[in-house]
Image (cartoon, rainbow, N blue to C red; front, side, top):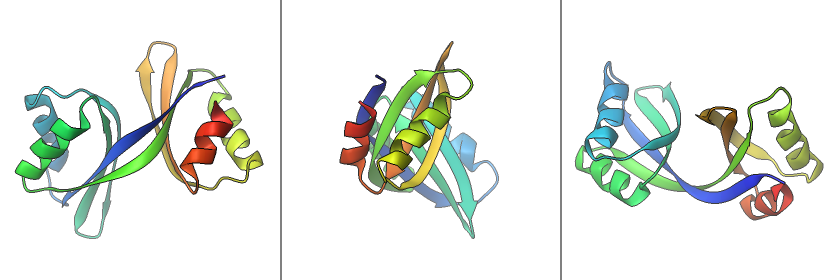
Length: 131
């Protein structure tokens, strides 16, 4: 039905300071790592970056070398058509399966496509539900 994959996301915790987005993304760029999806927010005195990359092990090493805290989370990615209602369909499927979405973010993956990233209460069931 959909292109659904279990993947690993990097959760990078940084100081919350001016220019930190450029430093995090510049670290990836300088290491030759493609960024597939990004969510960034601040909470109190910390910056939080949720990243899906082309090379997580290499990204992890590069970001830790910059002094950033890096954790890995299992997530589900879903490549969908970039059309009205496509995300709602995914949300309905997970809701009907009684799978709680802890968080979700998305990005344009290519022309006519979008990539959604989900962390759920049961990623295995989410993967099975969306396949």
